[in-house]
Amino acid sequence: MPQKSINLHLVSDSTGETLNSIARAVVANFDQVRVVHHRWSLVRTRLNLDRVLEGVQAEPGPVLFTLVDQSLRHALEETCARLHVPCLSVLDQVTELLQREIGAPARPRRAAQHVMDADYFRRIDAMHFVLAHDDGQGTQGIMNADVVLVGVSRSSKTPTCFYLANRGIKAANVPLVPGADLPPELDNPPCPVIGLTIDVAALIEIRRHRLKLIGATGIRQDELDYVNEEAVRAEILAARRLCAARGWPVIDVTRRSIEETAATVLQQMELWHRKRGSQMEHAPEDPAAAVLGSQS
Image 1 (tube, rainbow, N blue to C red):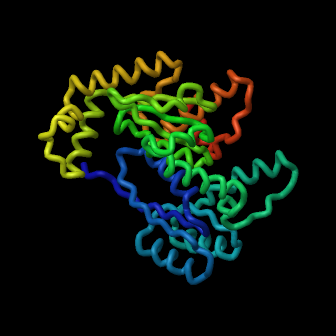
Image 2 (cartoon, helix red, strand yellow; image 1 turned 60 degrees about the vertical axis):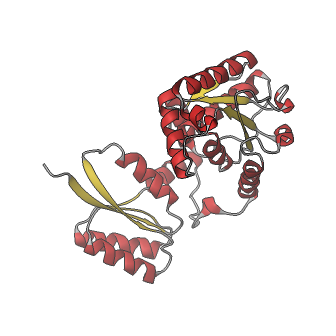
Image 3 (tube, rainbow, N blue to C red; image 1 turned 180 degrees about the vertical axis):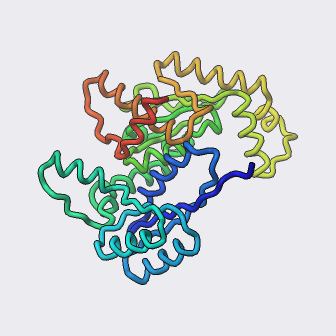
């Protein structure tokens, strides 16, 4: 049987990140259906909305929206009703629940979560920190890090650090290279150090792809060792033993997404601070991160 296909329209007066996240989480549970996403962001005027309405009419399908302007909401809902297309404001139920609990009405503000406040600049600072302390650079800066990730080459240290930076976490990463000494700053670090490990076969596949991308010939001995099964197995084992000897927790990233790895890093950071009786300065901003971590 041919796979069923539906159109899904995501209409936002801001960047659309909230809708994208919700849609991605829900659609992942329907692998028997092909969902064609139509993303409409920064819909803030009637002219913008008219383009959306034309798109919905041309390719009908459910509409999820986050619109603050009441006139735009009304026009969208009215058109969807006329076209017999399901239409849902994804934040209404949560807003109503919190209004009842708080005992005060919400004051809708467009793109309220994207204001350039202290948290915003903290995230920007964290991004700069990751850039300056990636792959063993600027090891003196480890003294100012919130967390340090260590692991063999291509174990997803860098993308995880960038994801954490988007949560305002200053993350440095240090590669564990056979025969190379660790920076002295890791002897008594002021922050948690967490190891990332990965399955041998998965790592070899990633490394082979990397060599192809950079045009390596695979002739040099270092390139051969980079993807040799026994050498890679020994490299991973040595890294795990090092982490165990230093009491550093290890996260296996083989079947984890970057988001899941970052969520587990946040959990380990929280445990580290609890053991030392200190309070973690930056809590995860995305509630989903905590959920992902608990499911890991």
